Length: 583
Image (cartoon, rainbow, N blue to C red; front, top):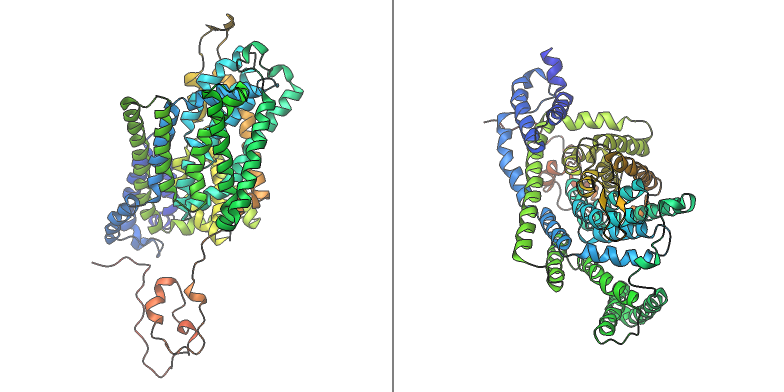
Protein backbone atom coordinates (compact mmCIF):
# COMPACT_ATOMS: atom_id res chain seq x y z
CA UNK A 1 0.00 0.00 0.00
CA UNK A 2 2.82 2.41 0.86
CA UNK A 3 4.53 1.61 -2.45
CA UNK A 4 1.29 2.31 -4.35
CA UNK A 5 0.85 5.70 -2.63
CA UNK A 6 4.51 6.60 -3.22
CA UNK A 7 4.37 5.74 -6.93
CA UNK A 8 1.10 7.66 -7.44
CA UNK A 9 1.95 10.73 -5.41
CA UNK A 10 1.36 13.15 -8.32
CA UNK A 11 -2.36 12.39 -8.94
CA UNK A 12 -2.97 12.22 -5.17
CA UNK A 13 -1.34 15.63 -4.74
CA UNK A 14 -3.37 17.18 -7.56
CA UNK A 15 -6.65 15.74 -6.23
CA UNK A 16 -5.76 17.05 -2.77
CA UNK A 17 -5.30 20.55 -4.17
CA UNK A 18 -8.76 20.45 -5.76
CA UNK A 19 -10.27 19.34 -2.44
CA UNK A 20 -8.47 22.16 -0.59
CA UNK A 21 -9.94 24.75 -2.96
CA UNK A 22 -13.44 23.25 -2.98
CA UNK A 23 -13.47 23.44 0.81
CA UNK A 24 -12.91 27.17 0.45
CA UNK A 25 -9.29 27.81 1.41
CA UNK A 26 -7.70 30.82 -0.32
CA UNK A 27 -5.97 29.63 -3.48
CA UNK A 28 -2.53 31.04 -2.66
CA UNK A 29 -2.42 29.38 0.77
CA UNK A 30 -3.97 26.15 -0.54
CA UNK A 31 -1.17 25.91 -3.11
CA UNK A 32 1.63 26.62 -0.64
CA UNK A 33 0.24 24.42 2.15
CA UNK A 34 -0.41 21.55 -0.24
CA UNK A 35 3.09 21.83 -1.64
CA UNK A 36 4.79 21.83 1.78
CA UNK A 37 2.60 19.03 3.17
CA UNK A 38 3.34 16.70 0.27
CA UNK A 39 7.02 17.70 0.31
CA UNK A 40 7.35 16.28 3.84
CA UNK A 41 5.33 13.20 2.88
CA UNK A 42 7.37 12.75 -0.31
CA UNK A 43 10.71 12.86 1.48
CA UNK A 44 9.58 10.10 3.84
CA UNK A 45 8.10 7.96 1.05
CA UNK A 46 10.99 8.42 -1.42
CA UNK A 47 12.65 5.06 -0.50
CA UNK A 48 9.40 3.25 -1.38
CA UNK A 49 8.78 5.01 -4.73
CA UNK A 50 11.08 2.97 -6.96
CA UNK A 51 12.75 6.21 -8.10
CA UNK A 52 9.49 8.07 -8.81
CA UNK A 53 10.04 10.60 -5.99
CA UNK A 54 13.27 12.59 -6.16
CA UNK A 55 12.60 14.86 -3.18
CA UNK A 56 15.19 15.49 -0.49
CA UNK A 57 15.51 18.13 2.21
CA UNK A 58 18.12 20.24 0.32
CA UNK A 59 15.43 20.88 -2.31
CA UNK A 60 13.92 23.43 0.07
CA UNK A 61 17.01 25.57 -0.48
CA UNK A 62 15.63 26.34 -3.94
CA UNK A 63 12.54 28.15 -2.58
CA UNK A 64 14.18 31.54 -1.83
CA UNK A 65 15.65 31.67 -5.32
CA UNK A 66 12.28 30.76 -6.86
CA UNK A 67 10.58 33.50 -4.82
CA UNK A 68 13.20 36.01 -5.89
CA UNK A 69 12.66 35.02 -9.52
CA UNK A 70 8.98 35.95 -9.16
CA UNK A 71 9.61 39.26 -7.41
CA UNK A 72 12.30 40.33 -9.87
CA UNK A 73 10.22 39.47 -12.96
CA UNK A 74 9.97 42.66 -15.05
CA UNK A 75 7.09 41.29 -17.13
CA UNK A 76 4.77 41.12 -14.11
CA UNK A 77 5.32 44.84 -13.48
CA UNK A 78 2.90 45.47 -16.35
CA UNK A 79 0.01 44.16 -14.21
CA UNK A 80 -0.08 47.05 -11.67
CA UNK A 81 0.48 49.62 -14.42
CA UNK A 82 -2.44 48.41 -16.55
CA UNK A 83 -4.66 47.95 -13.50
CA UNK A 84 -3.97 51.50 -12.33
CA UNK A 85 -4.60 52.84 -15.84
CA UNK A 86 -7.95 51.05 -16.04
CA UNK A 87 -9.17 52.27 -12.66
CA UNK A 88 -8.20 55.88 -13.36
CA UNK A 89 -9.96 55.78 -16.74
CA UNK A 90 -13.06 54.29 -15.16
CA UNK A 91 -13.15 57.20 -12.71
CA UNK A 92 -12.45 59.78 -15.42
CA UNK A 93 -15.92 59.39 -16.97
CA UNK A 94 -14.56 58.15 -20.30
CA UNK A 95 -17.03 55.25 -20.37
CA UNK A 96 -19.99 57.60 -19.83
CA UNK A 97 -18.94 59.89 -22.68
CA UNK A 98 -18.28 56.96 -25.03
CA UNK A 99 -21.56 55.20 -24.32
CA UNK A 100 -23.61 58.37 -24.68
CA UNK A 101 -21.92 59.44 -27.92
CA UNK A 102 -21.75 56.03 -29.63
CA UNK A 103 -25.31 55.31 -28.50
CA UNK A 104 -26.43 58.49 -30.26
CA UNK A 105 -24.46 57.51 -33.37
CA UNK A 106 -26.02 54.03 -33.64
CA UNK A 107 -29.37 55.09 -32.17
CA UNK A 108 -31.40 55.38 -35.40
CA UNK A 109 -30.99 51.66 -36.24
CA UNK A 110 -32.53 48.65 -34.52
CA UNK A 111 -30.22 47.30 -31.87
CA UNK A 112 -28.20 50.52 -31.98
CA UNK A 113 -27.68 50.60 -28.23
CA UNK A 114 -26.51 46.97 -28.26
CA UNK A 115 -24.01 47.77 -31.04
CA UNK A 116 -22.84 50.78 -29.04
CA UNK A 117 -22.31 48.65 -25.92
CA UNK A 118 -20.24 46.09 -27.86
CA UNK A 119 -18.19 48.80 -29.61
CA UNK A 120 -17.53 50.67 -26.36
CA UNK A 121 -16.78 47.36 -24.60
CA UNK A 122 -14.04 46.68 -27.16
CA UNK A 123 -12.65 50.21 -26.72
CA UNK A 124 -12.69 49.92 -22.93
CA UNK A 125 -10.99 46.53 -23.25
CA UNK A 126 -8.20 48.12 -25.28
CA UNK A 127 -7.75 50.91 -22.73
CA UNK A 128 -8.70 49.68 -19.27
CA UNK A 129 -8.12 45.92 -19.61
CA UNK A 130 -10.19 45.41 -16.43
CA UNK A 131 -13.43 43.40 -16.66
CA UNK A 132 -14.98 44.75 -13.46
CA UNK A 133 -14.57 48.38 -14.54
CA UNK A 134 -16.08 47.73 -17.98
CA UNK A 135 -19.10 45.71 -16.80
CA UNK A 136 -19.95 48.03 -13.91
CA UNK A 137 -19.60 51.18 -16.03
CA UNK A 138 -21.77 49.87 -18.84
CA UNK A 139 -24.27 48.36 -16.40
CA UNK A 140 -24.73 51.67 -14.62
CA UNK A 141 -24.96 53.76 -17.79
CA UNK A 142 -26.42 51.64 -20.58
CA UNK A 143 -28.71 49.18 -18.80
CA UNK A 144 -31.26 51.81 -17.60
CA UNK A 145 -31.36 53.34 -21.10
CA UNK A 146 -31.90 49.95 -22.77
CA UNK A 147 -34.70 49.12 -20.33
CA UNK A 148 -36.23 52.57 -20.83
CA UNK A 149 -36.66 52.02 -24.55
CA UNK A 150 -37.97 48.46 -24.41
CA UNK A 151 -34.94 46.20 -24.94
CA UNK A 152 -35.33 42.54 -24.07
CA UNK A 153 -33.93 42.07 -20.56
CA UNK A 154 -31.96 38.93 -21.39
CA UNK A 155 -30.39 40.52 -24.43
CA UNK A 156 -29.50 43.74 -22.58
CA UNK A 157 -27.85 41.96 -19.67
CA UNK A 158 -26.07 39.43 -21.90
CA UNK A 159 -24.63 42.10 -24.21
CA UNK A 160 -23.30 44.16 -21.30
CA UNK A 161 -21.74 41.19 -19.47
CA UNK A 162 -20.20 39.74 -22.66
CA UNK A 163 -18.83 43.08 -23.90
CA UNK A 164 -17.16 43.65 -20.54
CA UNK A 165 -15.32 40.34 -20.78
CA UNK A 166 -13.63 41.44 -24.02
CA UNK A 167 -11.05 42.97 -21.69
CA UNK A 168 -9.81 39.39 -21.19
CA UNK A 169 -8.66 38.82 -24.77
CA UNK A 170 -8.20 42.22 -26.42
CA UNK A 171 -4.75 43.67 -25.58
CA UNK A 172 -3.63 45.01 -23.15
CA UNK A 173 -5.25 42.15 -21.27
CA UNK A 174 -3.95 41.13 -17.85
CA UNK A 175 -4.58 37.45 -18.57
CA UNK A 176 -2.36 37.62 -21.67
CA UNK A 177 0.48 39.04 -19.55
CA UNK A 178 0.14 36.18 -17.06
CA UNK A 179 -0.13 33.55 -19.81
CA UNK A 180 2.93 34.90 -21.61
CA UNK A 181 4.89 34.74 -18.36
CA UNK A 182 3.75 31.17 -17.60
CA UNK A 183 4.43 29.99 -21.16
CA UNK A 184 7.83 31.66 -21.33
CA UNK A 185 6.90 33.77 -24.35
CA UNK A 186 7.00 37.46 -25.20
CA UNK A 187 4.05 39.57 -24.06
CA UNK A 188 4.34 41.56 -27.29
CA UNK A 189 3.97 38.39 -29.37
CA UNK A 190 1.01 37.32 -27.23
CA UNK A 191 -0.62 40.72 -27.87
CA UNK A 192 0.05 40.40 -31.61
CA UNK A 193 -1.47 36.93 -31.67
CA UNK A 194 -4.58 37.85 -29.67
CA UNK A 195 -5.49 41.02 -31.58
CA UNK A 196 -7.30 39.44 -34.56
CA UNK A 197 -9.18 36.79 -32.49
CA UNK A 198 -10.34 39.57 -30.16
CA UNK A 199 -11.67 41.62 -33.07
CA UNK A 200 -13.30 38.55 -34.65
CA UNK A 201 -15.03 37.78 -31.34
CA UNK A 202 -16.31 41.36 -31.22
CA UNK A 203 -17.64 40.89 -34.76
CA UNK A 204 -19.40 37.66 -33.76
CA UNK A 205 -21.16 39.50 -30.93
CA UNK A 206 -22.33 42.13 -33.42
CA UNK A 207 -23.43 39.43 -35.87
CA UNK A 208 -25.56 37.86 -33.15
CA UNK A 209 -27.22 41.21 -32.42
CA UNK A 210 -27.80 41.71 -36.16
CA UNK A 211 -29.45 38.30 -36.46
CA UNK A 212 -31.73 39.04 -33.50
CA UNK A 213 -32.64 42.45 -34.93
CA UNK A 214 -33.82 40.67 -38.12
CA UNK A 215 -35.67 37.75 -36.55
CA UNK A 216 -36.86 39.42 -33.31
CA UNK A 217 -37.05 43.14 -34.13
CA UNK A 218 -39.25 43.97 -31.14
CA UNK A 219 -36.51 42.88 -28.75
CA UNK A 220 -34.30 45.87 -29.65
CA UNK A 221 -36.11 48.98 -30.94
CA UNK A 222 -34.32 52.02 -32.32
CA UNK A 223 -33.98 55.16 -30.23
CA UNK A 224 -36.93 57.56 -30.69
CA UNK A 225 -36.18 60.92 -32.27
CA UNK A 226 -36.63 62.83 -29.02
CA UNK A 227 -33.87 60.75 -27.42
CA UNK A 228 -31.29 61.70 -30.09
CA UNK A 229 -30.11 64.91 -28.42
CA UNK A 230 -27.09 65.29 -30.72
CA UNK A 231 -29.32 65.31 -33.79
CA UNK A 232 -28.26 63.91 -37.14
CA UNK A 233 -25.08 64.56 -39.05
CA UNK A 234 -23.68 61.21 -40.11
CA UNK A 235 -22.84 62.65 -43.55
CA UNK A 236 -20.63 65.28 -41.94
CA UNK A 237 -18.86 62.57 -39.94
CA UNK A 238 -18.28 60.48 -43.07
CA UNK A 239 -16.80 63.49 -44.88
CA UNK A 240 -14.48 64.13 -41.94
CA UNK A 241 -13.34 60.50 -41.97
CA UNK A 242 -12.69 60.62 -45.73
CA UNK A 243 -10.63 63.81 -45.33
CA UNK A 244 -8.66 62.20 -42.47
CA UNK A 245 -8.06 59.15 -44.67
CA UNK A 246 -6.73 61.30 -47.53
CA UNK A 247 -4.38 63.14 -45.17
CA UNK A 248 -3.18 59.83 -43.74
CA UNK A 249 -2.58 58.41 -47.24
CA UNK A 250 -0.55 61.43 -48.31
CA UNK A 251 1.45 61.24 -45.07
CA UNK A 252 2.15 57.54 -45.67
CA UNK A 253 3.48 58.24 -49.16
CA UNK A 254 5.67 61.01 -47.78
CA UNK A 255 7.00 58.99 -44.81
CA UNK A 256 7.57 55.63 -46.53
CA UNK A 257 11.16 56.39 -47.63
CA UNK A 258 12.05 57.37 -44.04
CA UNK A 259 9.86 55.14 -41.82
CA UNK A 260 9.59 52.04 -44.01
CA UNK A 261 6.96 49.54 -42.87
CA UNK A 262 5.95 51.77 -39.95
CA UNK A 263 4.88 54.59 -42.26
CA UNK A 264 1.24 53.45 -42.25
CA UNK A 265 1.04 53.80 -38.45
CA UNK A 266 2.62 57.26 -38.46
CA UNK A 267 0.43 58.34 -41.38
CA UNK A 268 -2.73 57.25 -39.57
CA UNK A 269 -1.54 59.13 -36.50
CA UNK A 270 -1.07 62.35 -38.49
CA UNK A 271 -4.50 62.07 -40.12
CA UNK A 272 -6.13 61.48 -36.74
CA UNK A 273 -4.36 64.41 -35.06
CA UNK A 274 -5.34 66.80 -37.88
CA UNK A 275 -9.05 65.90 -37.82
CA UNK A 276 -9.11 66.03 -34.00
CA UNK A 277 -7.54 69.50 -33.97
CA UNK A 278 -10.04 70.65 -36.61
CA UNK A 279 -13.00 69.34 -34.57
CA UNK A 280 -11.75 71.14 -31.45
CA UNK A 281 -11.28 74.39 -33.40
CA UNK A 282 -14.71 74.05 -35.00
CA UNK A 283 -16.35 73.70 -31.56
CA UNK A 284 -14.21 76.33 -29.79
CA UNK A 285 -14.62 79.08 -32.39
CA UNK A 286 -18.20 78.25 -33.37
CA UNK A 287 -17.36 77.71 -37.05
CA UNK A 288 -20.12 75.08 -37.41
CA UNK A 289 -18.40 73.47 -40.39
CA UNK A 290 -19.16 70.05 -38.88
CA UNK A 291 -22.39 68.74 -37.40
CA UNK A 292 -22.70 68.55 -33.64
CA UNK A 293 -22.80 64.75 -33.83
CA UNK A 294 -19.58 64.63 -35.88
CA UNK A 295 -17.84 67.00 -33.46
CA UNK A 296 -18.86 64.95 -30.44
CA UNK A 297 -17.90 61.60 -31.96
CA UNK A 298 -14.45 62.82 -33.01
CA UNK A 299 -13.68 64.66 -29.76
CA UNK A 300 -14.84 61.80 -27.54
CA UNK A 301 -13.43 58.94 -29.62
CA UNK A 302 -9.93 60.23 -30.43
CA UNK A 303 -8.45 60.43 -26.86
CA UNK A 304 -9.05 56.74 -26.01
CA UNK A 305 -7.78 55.78 -29.47
CA UNK A 306 -4.68 57.88 -28.81
CA UNK A 307 -4.22 56.09 -25.49
CA UNK A 308 -4.55 52.73 -27.26
CA UNK A 309 -1.81 53.80 -29.67
CA UNK A 310 0.33 55.06 -26.79
CA UNK A 311 0.16 51.63 -25.18
CA UNK A 312 -0.27 49.07 -27.98
CA UNK A 313 1.22 51.09 -30.81
CA UNK A 314 4.51 51.60 -29.02
CA UNK A 315 4.63 47.90 -28.11
CA UNK A 316 3.87 46.75 -31.66
CA UNK A 317 6.37 49.21 -33.14
CA UNK A 318 9.05 47.92 -30.80
CA UNK A 319 9.51 51.32 -29.18
CA UNK A 320 8.48 50.13 -25.70
CA UNK A 321 8.23 46.90 -23.77
CA UNK A 322 4.80 45.95 -22.34
CA UNK A 323 5.92 47.19 -18.92
CA UNK A 324 7.02 50.53 -20.38
CA UNK A 325 3.81 50.70 -22.43
CA UNK A 326 1.80 50.14 -19.26
CA UNK A 327 3.69 52.93 -17.50
CA UNK A 328 3.01 55.34 -20.38
CA UNK A 329 -0.65 54.27 -20.37
CA UNK A 330 -0.91 55.04 -16.65
CA UNK A 331 0.51 58.52 -17.26
CA UNK A 332 -1.83 59.01 -20.22
CA UNK A 333 -4.82 57.98 -18.07
CA UNK A 334 -3.83 60.55 -15.44
CA UNK A 335 -3.60 63.25 -18.13
CA UNK A 336 -7.03 62.30 -19.55
CA UNK A 337 -8.60 62.40 -16.10
CA UNK A 338 -6.96 65.78 -15.41
CA UNK A 339 -8.20 67.21 -18.72
CA UNK A 340 -11.76 66.33 -17.69
CA UNK A 341 -11.30 67.87 -14.25
CA UNK A 342 -11.81 64.50 -12.53
CA UNK A 343 -8.34 63.91 -11.15
CA UNK A 344 -8.18 64.27 -7.39
CA UNK A 345 -6.11 62.98 -4.51
CA UNK A 346 -9.01 60.77 -3.41
CA UNK A 347 -9.40 59.10 -6.83
CA UNK A 348 -5.65 58.47 -7.15
CA UNK A 349 -5.49 57.12 -3.59
CA UNK A 350 -8.39 54.73 -4.24
CA UNK A 351 -6.86 53.62 -7.54
CA UNK A 352 -3.51 52.93 -5.87
CA UNK A 353 -5.21 50.94 -3.09
CA UNK A 354 -7.16 48.81 -5.59
CA UNK A 355 -4.04 48.26 -7.70
CA UNK A 356 -2.06 47.17 -4.64
CA UNK A 357 -4.74 44.68 -3.62
CA UNK A 358 -4.92 43.08 -7.07
CA UNK A 359 -1.13 42.98 -7.51
CA UNK A 360 -0.68 41.41 -4.06
CA UNK A 361 -3.36 38.85 -4.90
CA UNK A 362 -1.50 37.86 -8.08
CA UNK A 363 1.90 37.79 -6.34
CA UNK A 364 0.73 35.55 -3.48
CA UNK A 365 -0.91 33.10 -5.89
CA UNK A 366 2.30 32.97 -7.93
CA UNK A 367 4.45 32.38 -4.83
CA UNK A 368 2.10 29.61 -3.70
CA UNK A 369 2.28 28.10 -7.18
CA UNK A 370 6.09 28.07 -6.95
CA UNK A 371 5.92 26.04 -3.71
CA UNK A 372 3.39 23.65 -5.25
CA UNK A 373 5.37 23.16 -8.46
CA UNK A 374 8.61 22.48 -6.56
CA UNK A 375 7.00 19.46 -4.89
CA UNK A 376 4.90 18.45 -7.90
CA UNK A 377 7.95 18.20 -10.14
CA UNK A 378 9.80 16.42 -7.36
CA UNK A 379 7.21 13.63 -7.45
CA UNK A 380 7.45 13.47 -11.27
CA UNK A 381 4.08 15.17 -11.70
CA UNK A 382 5.08 16.52 -15.10
CA UNK A 383 5.72 12.94 -16.29
CA UNK A 384 2.27 11.88 -15.07
CA UNK A 385 0.59 14.80 -16.89
CA UNK A 386 2.62 14.16 -20.03
CA UNK A 387 1.73 10.46 -20.13
CA UNK A 388 -1.90 11.36 -19.51
CA UNK A 389 -2.15 13.87 -22.37
CA UNK A 390 0.39 12.81 -25.01
CA UNK A 391 -1.37 9.48 -25.47
CA UNK A 392 -4.68 11.15 -26.36
CA UNK A 393 -6.01 10.21 -29.83
CA UNK A 394 -6.00 12.84 -32.54
CA UNK A 395 -2.53 14.30 -32.02
CA UNK A 396 -2.43 18.07 -31.70
CA UNK A 397 -6.12 18.60 -32.44
CA UNK A 398 -7.19 15.90 -29.98
CA UNK A 399 -4.96 17.41 -27.30
CA UNK A 400 -6.33 20.91 -27.91
CA UNK A 401 -9.95 19.72 -27.80
CA UNK A 402 -9.50 17.78 -24.54
CA UNK A 403 -7.53 20.58 -22.89
CA UNK A 404 -10.09 23.22 -23.85
CA UNK A 405 -12.94 21.06 -22.53
CA UNK A 406 -10.98 20.61 -19.29
CA UNK A 407 -10.31 24.34 -18.92
CA UNK A 408 -13.94 25.15 -19.78
CA UNK A 409 -15.26 23.01 -16.93
CA UNK A 410 -12.56 24.07 -14.47
CA UNK A 411 -13.54 27.69 -15.20
CA UNK A 412 -16.85 27.01 -13.46
CA UNK A 413 -14.90 26.92 -10.18
CA UNK A 414 -11.60 28.77 -10.77
CA UNK A 415 -10.93 32.26 -12.08
CA UNK A 416 -8.39 32.99 -14.80
CA UNK A 417 -5.50 33.77 -12.42
CA UNK A 418 -5.90 30.42 -10.68
CA UNK A 419 -6.17 28.58 -14.01
CA UNK A 420 -3.10 30.37 -15.35
CA UNK A 421 -0.92 29.60 -12.33
CA UNK A 422 -2.08 26.03 -11.64
CA UNK A 423 -3.12 24.44 -14.94
CA UNK A 424 -1.06 26.21 -17.62
CA UNK A 425 2.40 25.24 -16.23
CA UNK A 426 1.30 21.60 -16.37
CA UNK A 427 -0.06 21.80 -19.92
CA UNK A 428 2.61 23.96 -21.57
CA UNK A 429 5.43 21.33 -21.68
CA UNK A 430 3.06 18.77 -23.22
CA UNK A 431 1.88 21.27 -25.85
CA UNK A 432 5.48 22.16 -26.65
CA UNK A 433 6.41 18.48 -27.00
CA UNK A 434 3.50 17.97 -29.43
CA UNK A 435 4.83 20.82 -31.58
CA UNK A 436 2.02 23.28 -30.77
CA UNK A 437 3.02 26.92 -31.00
CA UNK A 438 2.78 28.27 -27.45
CA UNK A 439 1.47 31.69 -28.52
CA UNK A 440 -1.40 29.96 -30.35
CA UNK A 441 -1.92 27.73 -27.32
CA UNK A 442 -1.92 30.75 -24.98
CA UNK A 443 -4.46 32.71 -27.04
CA UNK A 444 -6.72 29.63 -27.19
CA UNK A 445 -6.58 29.32 -23.41
CA UNK A 446 -7.18 33.07 -23.05
CA UNK A 447 -10.39 32.88 -25.12
CA UNK A 448 -11.49 29.84 -23.16
CA UNK A 449 -10.71 31.44 -19.79
CA UNK A 450 -12.82 34.41 -20.86
CA UNK A 451 -15.86 32.16 -20.42
CA UNK A 452 -15.02 31.88 -16.70
CA UNK A 453 -16.49 35.37 -16.33
CA UNK A 454 -19.72 34.30 -18.04
CA UNK A 455 -20.43 30.83 -16.63
CA UNK A 456 -23.64 30.66 -14.66
CA UNK A 457 -23.75 30.52 -11.69
CA UNK A 458 -20.21 31.62 -10.72
CA UNK A 459 -19.29 34.07 -13.51
CA UNK A 460 -17.78 37.24 -12.04
CA UNK A 461 -19.15 39.42 -14.86
CA UNK A 462 -22.65 38.24 -13.92
CA UNK A 463 -21.99 39.14 -10.28
CA UNK A 464 -20.72 42.59 -11.28
CA UNK A 465 -23.83 43.22 -13.38
CA UNK A 466 -26.13 41.89 -10.65
CA UNK A 467 -24.57 44.36 -8.20
CA UNK A 468 -25.54 47.41 -10.32
CA UNK A 469 -28.80 46.20 -11.95
CA UNK A 470 -32.11 47.27 -10.41
CA UNK A 471 -33.45 44.78 -7.88
CA UNK A 472 -36.79 46.50 -7.22
CA UNK A 473 -39.22 48.43 -9.50
CA UNK A 474 -38.34 52.10 -10.02
CA UNK A 475 -39.78 55.16 -11.75
CA UNK A 476 -37.89 56.31 -14.85
CA UNK A 477 -37.14 60.05 -14.65
CA UNK A 478 -37.30 60.62 -18.43
CA UNK A 479 -40.43 58.74 -19.47
CA UNK A 480 -42.23 58.67 -16.11
CA UNK A 481 -42.91 54.94 -16.58
CA UNK A 482 -42.48 52.27 -13.94
CA UNK A 483 -39.57 50.00 -14.87
CA UNK A 484 -39.55 46.43 -13.62
CA UNK A 485 -36.25 45.08 -12.21
CA UNK A 486 -33.99 42.51 -13.85
CA UNK A 487 -34.01 39.11 -12.19
CA UNK A 488 -30.90 37.02 -11.60
CA UNK A 489 -32.36 34.33 -13.89
CA UNK A 490 -32.63 36.85 -16.75
CA UNK A 491 -28.97 37.81 -16.29
CA UNK A 492 -27.89 34.15 -16.32
CA UNK A 493 -30.00 33.19 -19.35
CA UNK A 494 -28.82 36.29 -21.20
CA UNK A 495 -25.22 35.12 -20.81
CA UNK A 496 -25.78 31.64 -22.29
CA UNK A 497 -25.81 32.65 -26.03
CA UNK A 498 -22.58 34.60 -25.57
CA UNK A 499 -20.89 31.66 -23.83
CA UNK A 500 -21.85 29.60 -26.91
CA UNK A 501 -20.32 32.29 -29.15
CA UNK A 502 -17.09 32.13 -27.15
CA UNK A 503 -17.00 28.34 -27.54
CA UNK A 504 -17.48 28.86 -31.29
CA UNK A 505 -14.55 31.29 -31.22
CA UNK A 506 -12.35 28.64 -29.58
CA UNK A 507 -13.29 26.21 -32.37
CA UNK A 508 -12.57 28.82 -35.07
CA UNK A 509 -9.16 29.55 -33.55
CA UNK A 510 -8.31 25.85 -33.62
CA UNK A 511 -9.55 25.51 -37.21
CA UNK A 512 -7.84 28.70 -38.47
CA UNK A 513 -4.58 29.06 -36.53
CA UNK A 514 -3.37 31.82 -38.88
CA UNK A 515 -5.62 34.22 -36.99
CA UNK A 516 -2.98 33.94 -34.27
CA UNK A 517 0.12 32.82 -36.15
CA UNK A 518 0.52 36.11 -38.00
CA UNK A 519 2.56 37.35 -35.03
CA UNK A 520 6.26 37.95 -35.54
CA UNK A 521 7.10 34.45 -34.40
CA UNK A 522 9.34 33.03 -31.72
CA UNK A 523 12.80 34.41 -31.38
CA UNK A 524 15.43 32.32 -33.10
CA UNK A 525 17.28 30.28 -30.52
CA UNK A 526 20.59 28.50 -30.95
CA UNK A 527 20.47 24.80 -30.23
CA UNK A 528 24.03 23.63 -29.48
CA UNK A 529 23.04 20.03 -30.24
CA UNK A 530 22.58 20.96 -33.90
CA UNK A 531 25.86 22.86 -34.35
CA UNK A 532 28.22 21.17 -36.77
CA UNK A 533 31.88 22.24 -36.98
CA UNK A 534 33.63 19.91 -39.41
CA UNK A 535 37.23 19.00 -38.56
CA UNK A 536 37.10 21.22 -35.52
CA UNK A 537 40.49 22.18 -34.17
CA UNK A 538 38.85 22.53 -30.76
CA UNK A 539 38.66 18.77 -30.45
CA UNK A 540 36.66 17.76 -27.42
CA UNK A 541 37.88 20.56 -25.22
CA UNK A 542 34.57 22.43 -25.04
CA UNK A 543 32.30 19.42 -25.08
CA UNK A 544 32.16 18.70 -21.39
CA UNK A 545 31.59 22.32 -20.46
CA UNK A 546 28.44 22.76 -22.53
CA UNK A 547 27.16 19.24 -22.87
CA UNK A 548 25.17 18.14 -19.88
CA UNK A 549 23.66 21.50 -19.10
CA UNK A 550 22.09 21.80 -22.53
CA UNK A 551 20.69 18.31 -22.87
CA UNK A 552 23.16 17.00 -25.47
CA UNK A 553 24.28 13.39 -25.69
CA UNK A 554 27.49 13.12 -23.63
CA UNK A 555 28.40 9.84 -25.30
CA UNK A 556 28.51 11.47 -28.74
CA UNK A 557 31.54 13.30 -30.16
CA UNK A 558 31.30 16.90 -28.94
CA UNK A 559 30.48 19.42 -31.66
CA UNK A 560 30.85 16.82 -34.41
CA UNK A 561 34.55 16.31 -33.60
CA UNK A 562 36.41 13.02 -33.83
CA UNK A 563 35.29 10.11 -31.70
CA UNK A 564 37.25 9.66 -28.47
CA UNK A 565 40.07 7.12 -28.49
CA UNK A 566 39.02 3.99 -26.57
CA UNK A 567 42.64 3.51 -25.45
CA UNK A 568 42.53 6.75 -23.50
CA UNK A 569 41.35 6.61 -19.89
CA UNK A 570 37.63 7.04 -19.56
CA UNK A 571 36.38 10.34 -18.18
CA UNK A 572 34.79 10.24 -14.72
CA UNK A 573 31.02 9.70 -14.87
CA UNK A 574 28.83 12.81 -14.98
CA UNK A 575 26.92 13.58 -11.81
CA UNK A 576 23.27 12.44 -11.67
CA UNK A 577 21.44 15.74 -11.88
CA UNK A 578 18.06 14.07 -11.39
CA UNK A 579 18.89 13.62 -7.68
CA UNK A 580 19.09 16.46 -5.14
CA UNK A 581 22.48 17.33 -3.70
CA UNK A 582 23.42 15.46 -0.54
CA UNK A 583 24.36 17.28 2.61
